[in-house]
Length: 61
Image (cartoon, rainbow, N blue to C red):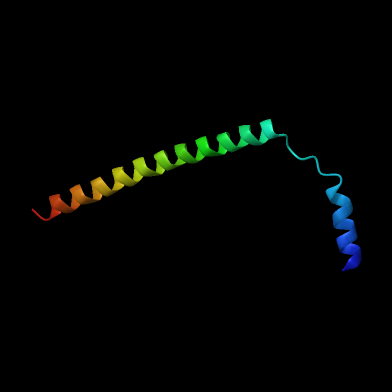
C-alpha cells in the first residue's frame, strides 16, 4: 500500500495541468455542447409528446 502511494505521488509530478485559458475554453465548450444537447432532446420530446397526444385525440373521436 505504501509503495502504491509513493508511486502515485511520483506520477502526480508528471501530470501536465491545463492552463487557466485552456480550462476556460474547455469549460465553455462543454457548456455549449450541453445546451445544444438539451435543445435537441427538448425538441424531440416535444415532437413525440405532441404526436402521441394528437394520435390519442384522433383515436378517441
